[in-house]
Amino acid sequence: MSHGQVILASGSEIRARILLNAGIAFSVMKPDFDEDAAKSELRAQNFSAADLARALAEGKARACMAPESALVIGADQILEFDGELLDKCRSIEEARDRLWALRGKEHGLWSAWAIARSGRILAAGVDYSGLRMREFSEIYLETYLGSAGPCLTRSVGAYEYEGTGAQLFEDVRGDFYAILGLPLLPLLAKLREFGAIDA
Image 1 (cartoon, rainbow, N blue to C red):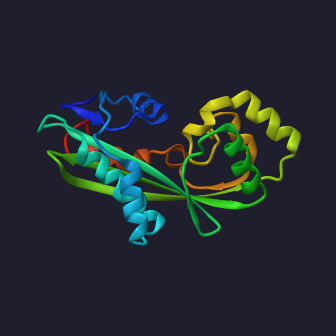
Image 2: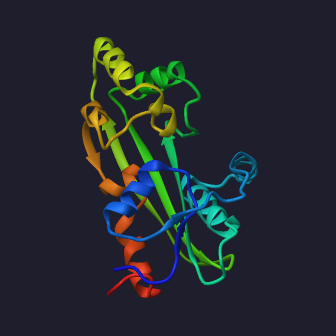
């Protein structure tokens, strides 16, 4: 059971679904946060993938114009591959190139969360997952792109791991929810600690 007001500072459908399925009563409010500008500035300061994901999650949580008593959840995810930090693909063509580059190799996902109240961060964390894709065929890739469609541009990895995207992988080390973009268990622990949900 939820108590008080919980706000998700994100337009992500999958993050909202994770909270909803966990029985959390919450509302969605997109933060007034220029993610691209913040990311460029932080990268210029040579932030690591973990620190970048956490800083962006905290920035979103702080930027949300929420009631003073509300707990605001911010989240972000960074993909690291061959020493590069990758952003979401802008097109299906770019998603095709991304998946073909990841084929048969391992990449990492840094998934961060933060909880703020009145613009002050109360708690934050980062979870790492290592994922190795199998050496799928070009035929399979085209079939997958055709069935998944434009939704692939909503995921930094250009896959939906919670659905048929799972067929792209041969080995995964990490938490399921973190891979989807919201490390749920540590987040729930903090919501209980702050009295937002029953202990």
